[in-house]
Length: 289
Length: 289
Image 1 (cartoon, rainbow over the protein chains, first blue to last red):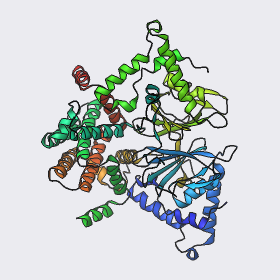
Image 2: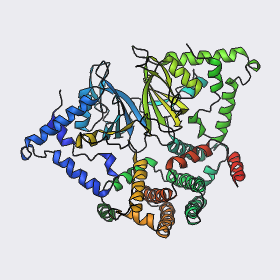
Image 3: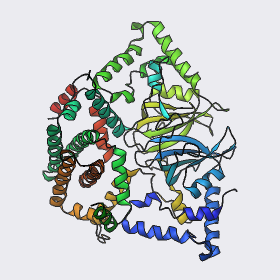
Image 4: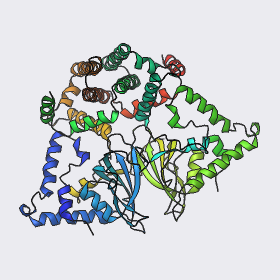
């Protein structure tokens, strides 16, 4: 076992992300629990505490169902967007190192050694939490990437759609990221914005009208927010609420596109805001002006 | 090869989801392309077209870097929420069957046979698109689950946080789903709602105030939408826009919680809306009343 547990112990100061949203009170309590693991100065800690954590990590590593080569699957996922960034394999050391270093670390089957994503590119994946599946043979590294994850420079390694390839097998790589609904919409709005800026601006669309008319866009956002509220005030059914919320999301995302703000940045704001107490948050807002 | 290509050909009527958002025009064009593959009546199609698709599927299957056991990793992801539902392995037949049937299908290493998720539980994962990674040895099944994916009844198989297990190794399974930021927030709001309804309603919080005061909540939603617009109208910087959008999202999600509407339902509305032409969408709204 190549992993130093003093390093590992330090790392456990991380607040498990799954707790961040549970409650500000929980969050502070958890921070205290995690800090009790953490020998900021090694000499100031009782040795049995370190030993106890070492034993816990070992027990956890024992509980993983390693395959006949001592490996399990590890999937790195963006904590904010949910994008699956890459997939690799881990052995016992790789998982221990990830727990310890909070950087997504894998076992390279071709080079027969550990590798930390980002050790060459500096595009590390900073771990927020790690999850095991029900069978304990598959792992999610929930993390925040410092930059594009794929060695090709793509945000994720998954950019070849099977259906695109079947349509056009001789064509270029499809280069459509495996985007989930919110990010597909964001990508479409962004394409409309590019079309609006080009001389041949393509077919007319509602998105383009909104992109070209600030007054219309802002009046629609205010109107849709009002309509969403009215589904509650006037006790309309759930499907009306879902539909009006869809309108709010779509129109506000057109505004985000105009301002060059990514939904990922908004979610990062939310994550940071909810991981601190309301008091801290207000303080940090006050210092921001 | 156990897969019938006539079945496979039929399946390719599916519009690749990656294209759904590209443009309504693209969408219709793609549908036409896909339909040209599709022998609704086998006799009405020229045989060479079928052969051509068969060859394309074979070429695609050849391009996958199967491991020494003839397997690749397949990750099933919820197309709307981005949640990683489960991970399994596929062989050539399993991937061909998934392309053909549009139900996520895997190869069971323990039972040495194909299995379609949902064949027992009826909780199928309905495929919207399939992605290969840059190395062609890892696959994403982007799909919509009919129900909980895990055999335990959990929405996904990933509910054991490593950091929770290290804190409390003897405790119950942590039962915290690997939630990304938006869904962590949704889960927190939902917990506050449960606390508000219980006799000991826990610590006071802003979320609880909003949950208990419809007038305050709706006035905040209208106010935050207005403030978001003003960041654009008054040319404020990007960080202000991200911050105001975070406020809009948070407050509207409190309203969704009150109305028992999941963000997943909202995203499903958006996905359906953007996969049809504006004219169709307006028509379907009109028929809804």
